[in-house]
Length: 365
Image 1 (cartoon, rainbow, N blue to C red):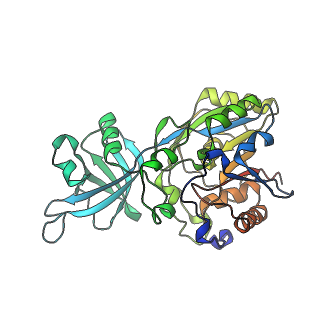
Image 2 (cartoon, one colour; image 1 turned 120 degrees about the horizontal axis):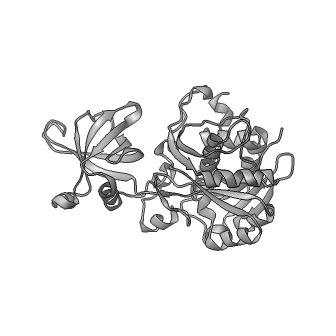
Image 3 (cartoon, helix red, strand yellow; image 1 turned 120 degrees about the vertical axis):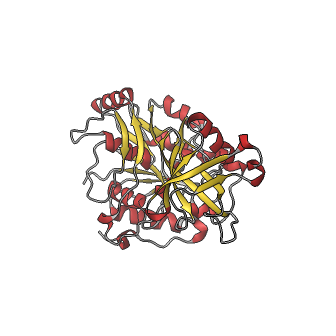
């Protein structure tokens, strides 16, 4: 497969910069392979599910993972000794005091460099400092930052100094503001650790969750901490050569057992978002049994993949040539998804993180 196989033209004005209000008023394109596309709204989701189905949500919580700071010291600053401005997007926690991060500018950083995050006013008080050392340097501007504080103290420092890591296609058009602290978080988020929202879940309201339970649909929660690698473009023309960044996920024994029971009773597993789908597929064996899972996954799903767990997928509309568009093409069929995206563009659906949703039924062929 070539990267060009997953390209399509998307007008700039289809990129949503704010979510629908209320959240469940977003549009929902229902896609059943071999059938006509159907336009609905998210609030009508219970109409397409059956009693006994199981909805699986990713309960990760987005942290304010974008940090601005200065690379300090005469040997690491500018030619005249002045500090150099840098920006870090935290990607994956590797220990209580260390984070893997994408740095800009990354090429000029060296192992051993010191970085002070926050404003100059913050750094005037020792107790407000959030300083780190570049402990490792990797390709593509990725480094490992060793912070001077760890554990809960580091969490507090990141919350104080960080900004919400809005996707690049939104951040390029407007700055992050206080409203994004609520908008870019699901109503059921509880496990800190993501640097990007599981965006299909942004459509859910407490009222919609109650309506689903009243329909007889069970709700289950798994955790996949989404890394900044989700925004990285595919740079290889041969899709098979692309390497996914690993992300940590967990499926508890209770959830695994509950989903196996749903399947045994004839219910369907409905994944809310590609993150919950990727995690469940990582936790499910070739025999179709979901097992407890607590590990990193770098699963890369492209057309030809045989799905083990997911029967239905609710997801937003994705970037051209992205790994997520490859995933939905694998799930519902490439021709089906091309037709669905052409319909979405021609009828004004809003794309990406704050955009509208789609409900995809798996291509059984």
